[in-house]
Length: 206
Image (cartoon, rainbow, N blue to C red; front, side, top):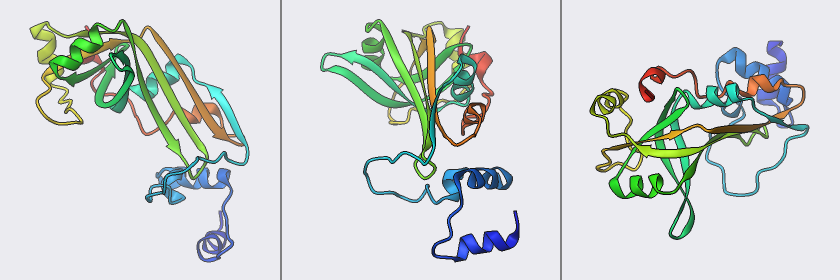
């Protein structure tokens, strides 16, 4: 890619880089295509637009686990007294279990709900791309002292703050995911999102 072309795109009012070129440049620079296109700048709420050449792919279980293994923030989905309920939590993932910290009331609601859902995603509005992963399975409270001691070393801080001392795990009975990509970008590249390999996998489940 010539410096002259980059200067033209950067300085010209009508200069526009194709989605494929932007993707290649972002990989060379080691930044996300979203950041390169200014997608990290605060955007007003509104309807997300499809890209010029969208393709919807299903993710393999292995790709789903790759996204989960970096931890971060995900969304618990379960049925409460008011109906379907969802809220975000900080989590870790390993050995086909999601683990997070919560309070006694939420732990009771989750463990008595039968199967619950856990969802993570990453959206690049500027590129019209993204992926999502859904894990489904039963939730249970961790009560074994040795296991709790292992989980404490993960330093999972509750996203909502406050006193949330109870560890809850969700077993991955089912895993599914989807990715929307543009042009000829391989679906495998969409599995390399911001969530990298976990350092904590061996401690999450026993």
